[in-house]
Amino acid sequence: QSVLTQPPSVSAAPGQKVTISCSGSSSNIGNNYVSWYQQLPGTAPKLLIYDNNKRPSGIPDRFSGSRSGTSATLGITGLQTGDEADYYCGTWDSSLFIWVFGGGTTLTVL
Amino acid sequence: QVTLRESGPALVKPTQTLTLTCSFSGFSLSTSGMCVGWIRQPPGKALEWLAVIDWEDDKYYNSSLKTRLTISKDTSKNQVVLTMTSLDPMDTATYFCARMTAATQKYYFDYWGQGNLVTVSS
Picture 1 (cartoon, one colour):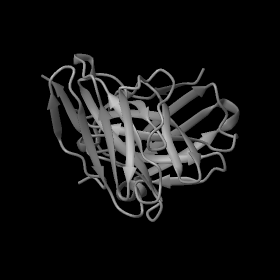
Picture 2 (cartoon, chains in turn orange, blue):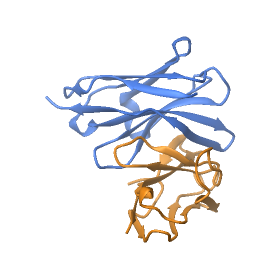
Picture 3 (cartoon, rainbow over the protein chains, first blue to last red):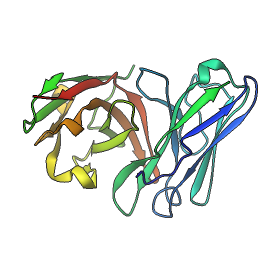
Picture 4 (tube, each protein chain N blue to C red):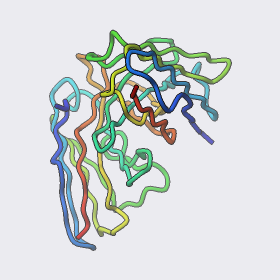
């Protein structure tokens, strides 16, 4: 049971938009910035979004992030088959002094 | 550029101790805001955070694994070592090390190693 809650899977057609939610509590998402990670099959996770809504160099603006209260959302527009991956949210928990990940969401581009 | 690489055994027997080394370059663990963490992923399952060590040598551990984990750093060698005792087949996973950038309320893993698959079996 992960501290952060994500839907197990989402799907959409190529070219469409999808959002992935990440729900936490006041001690984690409510108090610290959220990051998102993309894990393509058979590879290491890659930082996709940090500080709630910032993109590292090289990440296209099709990927966006937001945070409201104790929840965060990852948005992906203009879906491509190459976006099929597992996506994880993560943040620091200030009460437990631990890092917490969501359980991961598998994106399928139909 | 920043790189991290995990090294360690591929096969460990139950009850044994696992020692993994993360060798990194492109940054110093003595620089304010720099940390290195360990994350594992059992086959087909989600990421699980294990531990992190920061530039001041503060250490933080996964609550449920805390009694079995030790993280340490050798700043001069640019290495971080994770030891896990009392290995069980359930500990079979790919173990990743990653750099964490830390500031007040802002933490994220920005660079990852490729991972080291560890199988626990007799």
